[in-house]
Image (cartoon, rainbow, N blue to C red; front, side, top):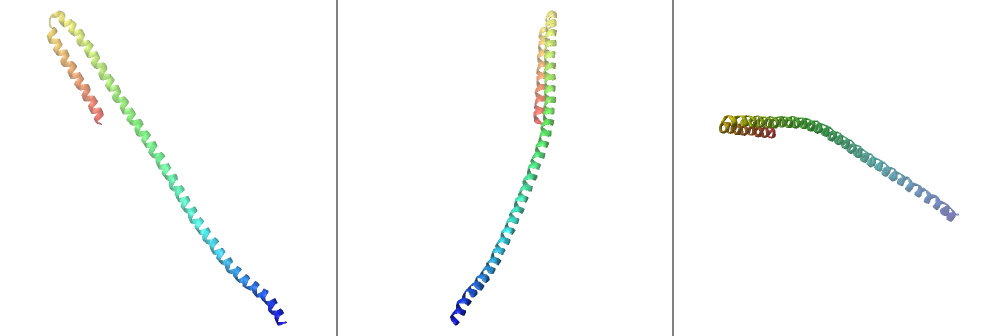
Length: 141
């Protein structure tokens, strides 16, 4: 009977040891699961922070584009004004040249063609110098 008790006790002892080991493994597995949950929580937090930072960066970039568009529109308007001034100056020069040509023809009839030629040339030179000065000043800005 001693052998029977030992044989019957052996499986019970084996099951108790197995149960103790399983309880120990359950604690290890539970700790590992908790560690994985913490790790995933940290990763989720980093991803959400990165996503928020990306959204802010895109928002700032779009705001910068809007400002740049407004600045470009203002510069285009300034360019158009300067271009119109330049065209007006050219029209004035053409008009002055026509007038000087008409005066020149009238002066030749009177015998004063040499003096009017010099005056017309001086007027043209002054007009072109003014035009160049306007262009340089506009480009300087």
